[in-house]
Image (cartoon, rainbow, N blue to C red; front, side, top):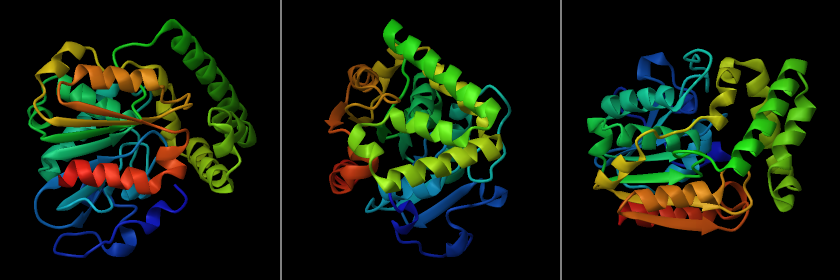
Amino acid sequence: MTDPSSSGAASDGPGRTPAADRNRPGEETGWISTFGSGDPITLFAHGFSGQIRDTRPFAAGIDGTRALMHLGGHGGRPSPGAGWGYGTIAAQLSDALAATGATRALGVSMSAGGLARLITSGDPRATALTKVAFVLPASWAGFSPTLSDALDDSLTRIRRLLADGDRDGLVDHFLSREPAEVRALEPARAWTRQKVDALVDTDMSDGVGLAAEIAVDQPEAAADFAGDVLVLTQEEDASHPVEIARDYAAAFPRARLEVLAPGSILWRGRTRIRRLLTDFFNG
C-alpha cells in the first residue's frame, strides 16, 4: 500500500477522534477510529506490523460506519505481553466488536486468524456477524510439514536478526518472501523498512512468534457459521500461503475464495480489491 493514510474520507462527529488523529487513536476510544456514519457497522483489523492507515484502503467505499482498530503492540497501543497466541488476538477483537456494535468484520492476516478463532470458539458477537472478509489468512488448523519447516526457519532468522539489531537484514529477509516484481518496487521497500523500524523499536516484537501459531483449534465449528464469507489471497506469498486460504474457504459453508496474482492485494491490484470488497459488503 503506497499511501494508506490517504484513503477513506473522515467525518468528525460527537465522540469521534479529531481527523488529524484518526490514524493513531488512543485508549480513550478503545484504540478505535470511526469513519462514516449509520448502519451497518463494519470492524476492520490489521495484520502483524500493520496499522490503521494500512486498513483504510480496505474500508474505502464500504457503506455505513467503518470502525478501524489497533491491536496491542501496534500504533502506540501497549503489547498484551510476550508470546501472543490467536486467543490473544481474538480477545481484543471481541472487545472491539462489543465496543462498536459491528455486525460485519474484515481481518487481515493475524486478524483474519483472530476472527476465525473467535467465530469457531462460539463467541456470540462473532457468530452473529453477517459478513466476514478474511484477507491474506496466514494460519488455520495446522501447517503441512513443508510449510511448518519453512516457518520455523524464517522465525529463527528473524529472531537472530532482531537480537543483532540488524534492520537491513530484516528488510532483506521480509522482502525475500515477496515476489520479485514486488521486491523491485521502491514503495514496497520503504513500507517494509517502516515495519522493521516498528518491530525493532517497539514492543511489537512480543508477537513475532505468532506466525507459527495455529489459529483455530475447533475448525469443525466453522460449518455452523451462517454469515457470508469472502476469502482473499494472492499467489507466491510465502507469509500467506494459498493452501491456508483454501482451508478457510472449505471450512465456511457460505465462503467465496478469490486467489489473485502475486502482489495484488497490497501493491498491484488496488482497484480490483476495492471492487471485490464493495461488492461483498455493499451487495
